[in-house]
Image (cartoon, rainbow, N blue to C red; front, side, top):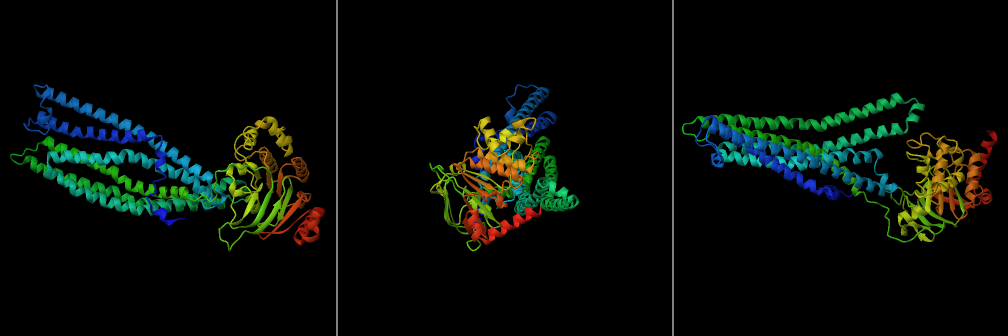
Length: 601
């Protein structure tokens, strides 16, 4: 990944996420400023009550502002000033409540947009892009990291406007009362802020390490949930439990390591500010009791009130170093998703797949992108429209890799793959993949009914079209045996159907696309030979469709128009079953070994 990109602030991807929520994002700071301004008036009203009504001091700070009030005695004065204080408090409370609501709306909308953008980016990933991330890590980035960004955005709208204005307003009012006493705050503020900034820079690395440990732990949870049958069948529950406990303990230690630094923040901040308040009481008491002093007890209480407001503002600010450290780590992880370069682009093109002609021309491919470590080497292959082509070879010889070049799940390193006479890179991805239907080795069904799963192949498919595809795939026979038929709920991942039934459903779903090219990647391995033969017979009726079948059993493809033999990432030979039996040692050995196994069974 480009290191220069990591050094930037990385907020350019966040700006579009505010779209649709600009108004509450703007209203929140405005409401916070009004809340603070009204809150700042309360100590001044209190000073007026203490000095003007309680101590009958002739010159109190608010006399000039309140001289026009219609009062004739102290009781009326208390009612007027007390009433103004209550009104200011209620208005401040109202602004605070409205600000809390608008900040919640703005931050939740921001998080919604951010999740959508992350999810849309992930959907654009090719297989190669997805290989750069753990699945659990992508889940954490789209959930926990986004939640961190949401909390920070909400805090930013409220506290990062409220706290500075509260410090400014309170400090200004304090200086208006007594500038010399207020200098105590001037000295205290930098003493508080310096360690906070240091904590923020140090904490970022610690939180980034914490998120890596969180990814590891969630990866372990995901593996155990997906592979729970394997864990139970091998009686490895205790082992996996110990493994998870070790991962959880490691995460806990990292969390403590990340957050213990910030446990010092509150004691340092409160120690300095309350120390400043004690000094203010000490020096303020001397000034109040000095002969001829114009500073009243009410004025001193207002100063103390403003010092409390400044302390409250600093408590808000002190939360930010930890929050920003955690958020910056989350932001870096989110940016890694956004900055992942999509290696398969979708050009604007009007091309559509007109027929199933396929041609490989000197194709080289490497998962690592290293031309010295090739997974496919100098592949040359021509497939005519409507042909049935079998692909055989040992594990890891490049069979699945070969067919994944056709719908551009991966792109070639050099050479070209042509479909219907055009390089696959000339097609828009949607048009290309609409023309190519692929059933992968790992079959996946989604939560919902059988009918809903079938309509992944064609959202507009009629019930008759669904049944026709299922009949070809030999799925209709077991679907109709279910009490709810095509309305049967499959559960998560098709957990309530067998492996063979799942394969047949996936084949039917692929057929509903009515593709020009159908690729079956070992997708009948869990089906019995009799059912597999009926599926092959059903596929023969689709004469306008090119069919590529990867199979471990040669009996599954021996009647194909041509058979491709793969060896170490190269095409060893191509021909019919009879031709390969005569000239391909690899093919003949595989066939004879399977015949012997069947004879001995």
